[in-house]
Length: 418
Image 1 (tube, rainbow, N blue to C red):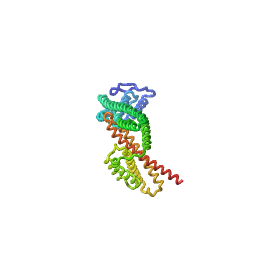
Image 2: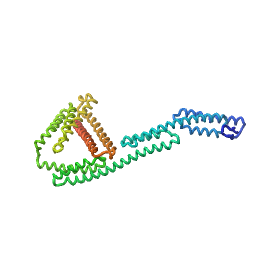
Image 3: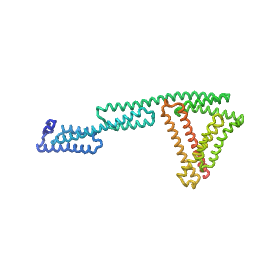
Image 4: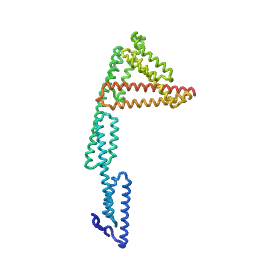
């Protein structure tokens, strides 16, 4: 049994007649129905597909099958249908590849802008998204493929090379800073045991000034050195207290006491407000904080540091209590009608949320600083950052103390009930 030549396919043998010519012809005509079924199924799959161009390889396989499938039928018609569909897919693929080229060029342009950025954290996330988009975009025309891939890779390489150089520079800078901290900490451990208290105090004051000038480094790297430094500071402070105690109280000269009087009045008012809470006080405490800043620091007066610390602790506590109560009343309007233990339980939950939030804010603040280019920031920047960080830590400490007090009250009430 032979199939006549069609189109560019030569005449070929498709099988052997076993019974009769009629039965053989019927058999091979029936077999033609198989390839027709494949073609119909293929066309339906193409129509349903979102990415129609992906079916081109299957179409080429069906065209090849027409040249060797053992059957009798209208192979010319089938093949021409496939040719027509192939032309349609080629046109669609050409259009898609043109679109793909435009999409990839847009990503190249976007990367070209980002590659020189020093906002490492935010830009790194954007670069990841761009890379994902690039992978999802289909191919472009072969003649343009090498050029766009090369351009995209060059922009990526430029960004990642600069980022690596930044982190290398930052790490090197951190090494230098840590070495300075280590020298100062060791010096502090020596100074804290000097027999001459006056000289020890003056020298430690210089060490503190030098310590502030070094700048910020990752907390985990500084912790061991900081522990040694704090131990020395605590030891010297204890010696100074004992020394002052042995000498008895020392009154400030009248003119210095007069300078500190406005500060003491503000502290006194904050203590009055703490007794009045939870009935207001937040607006007044904020105004007093502004007044305190307007008065300015008195760094030359030794007693001022304790006053400054006490005032800021009081204000932070006022604001924390007020804010806690405001949230409690908002969430539970009838809170005052509840048993005291239940009221405290609600406030404990609020304070735990606020403590967690403050810890996350501090961590984010430190991470954002870590992402800044050390070559564009100096010690003045470190000092501003350190001041803000200390303020955030002071606020966190205030909330943690308030939480501890509430938990103590709650536990005490539980014991009384039992």
